[in-house]
Amino acid sequence: MRRAFRVLWKKLRPGPPHFSSVSFVDSMSMVPDDLRDVIYIVGTVNFPKWAVFECPCGQGHRLTVPLMKSVSPHWMLQIRRGRASLWPSVSVDDDPCSSHFWLRANRIEWARWAWEKSCRCF
Image (cartoon, rainbow, N blue to C red; front, side, top):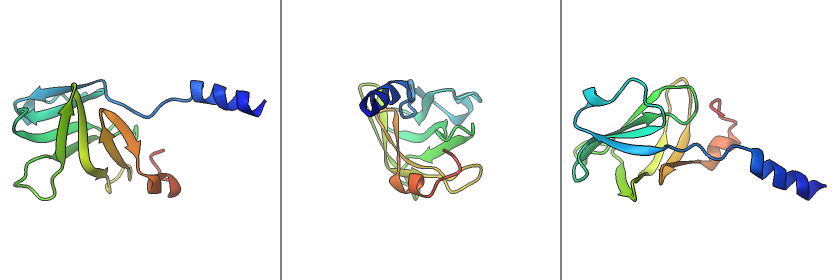
């Protein structure tokens, strides 16, 4: 019985949040107000400037992550097979949430300490 419950739970529970696609735009003014499940990269493939996407906490706020080496701190972007990965991890210290996660191949991987702290965004 216990095993059957675990199998059923794995099938029914939602997977980690993910983004459907990556879209390159020339400027911040071209990033739409409604981001949906798209990661917008401002700049070009060779010279990305910003990554803009909706915070995975579900509160609906926008995250703007600097990718330019001239800015500190900045994140590294990797695009493979149309999927984006960022490192180091993204930590949001502002309201309305305090998320901490990695973006790997368009999927969110929550930082373990966020679960342990019972973060407001989960």
